Image (cartoon, rainbow, N blue to C red; front, side, top):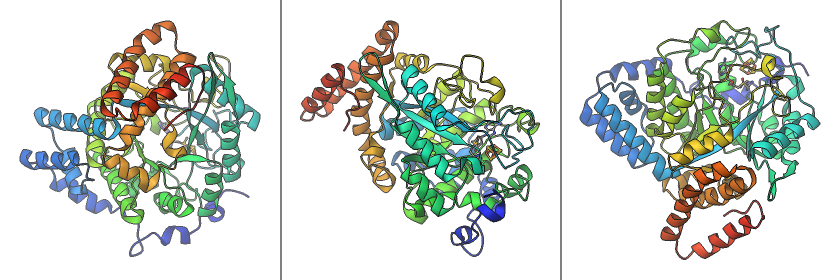
Length: 490
Ligand code: SAM
Ligand code: SF4
């Protein structure tokens, strides 16, 4: 089947989610809310922070006020509240993953992306199932990754059946390590919006989070960036992608925007409005927000000319406001950004980071230097997973490889409730220790073990103090991992 708007888009799977014939992003309303929020009253801002600290989703008008805070003292209070919330909901841990770019074929012509069908400079490639397995073996065997974000262009060559088979291929790989084995245990997917029937197909392949970035919530900018007549040119098909995911039975979804295309405050408002719409629709908010920022991509002029008001300071402001506005949602800052900026964002409440990242197709299994001409854009943080883990450990932060929530059915509404009440943090703390022990024994150098061991000891001591009755059971699994058993969790 050719991929054109007529063959891909199911009009009734858009309009059924509309109210009064239109989508839920009202540009003029957002602009009015932002305008009305200029010069916020500090007392009002502090009331809003109290609401965030009670783990309640903010109203868009409240988010707008936070976006306009410029007083350094108030910004500092916001950042402190953001970190407190992160600690309450997610404890002091960071979850790591790595993207696996599987196919660069694409029918769309997004003006910022190196995969655009108009980019003749790109050597396109779609991995075979054997090549996908080789990628999985390299990622999990060399660096010790347990979570993968599988990324696909939109093209008949990488349709729903292909995506499902790719997931099965990745899950099938299990490699021997120093003291045990390693395998990918959770695969999230970043792909184009799909019909409900296609989403049911990829759900059967074992998808973790389904990620679709809106790129920009601003209708006119969206139309400028995505030419009419392409599949992606249809704003309505994209803005309703997660409603269809829920109706297909996928209750774990990730939202994002590509910062640098339109006013950053507007985009944060868009993300929060989208989260609230999903809460309204199904009682389940997004599992994650991603905040990619436009980076130079081959063949794209737009990508080298992002809006210049989205400075690093505004990036941090956006991350802080997202943490405060939707307190239970995970926040991902990818290796597109510099190490300094990513490290600063750890204290503002981010929960997931990628490392040892390669974004060329087949780049993990390739020889060094081979991937460069196939990349979608350029990376800002070249740290290996081991380097990132040690940097975090020096700050007392534990890296978690936990994938238990999804495999124990703690997803969707169920996980939202336990996140909001701080209960999920309990499981996560325990599973973080168990999975970190595995990683240290299988992959860390002696120097890294020395840096990381105090963190794991401190976490174990905290578990013993907080859950004395449960502790013997936890210790039993911990000791079994030390003896070479793998993939034990609660
Ligand atoms: N084709 C699918 C889609 O468009 O949703 C998914 C794959 S696409 C490669 C994944 C994401 O990469 C896009 O949603 C976009 O936000 C991001 N991206 C594209 N071009 C970029 C650039 N120049 N800099 C940073 N991120 C970019
Ligand atoms: Fe294709 Fe996605 Fe790139 Fe657009 S952003 S050109 S849809 S891969």
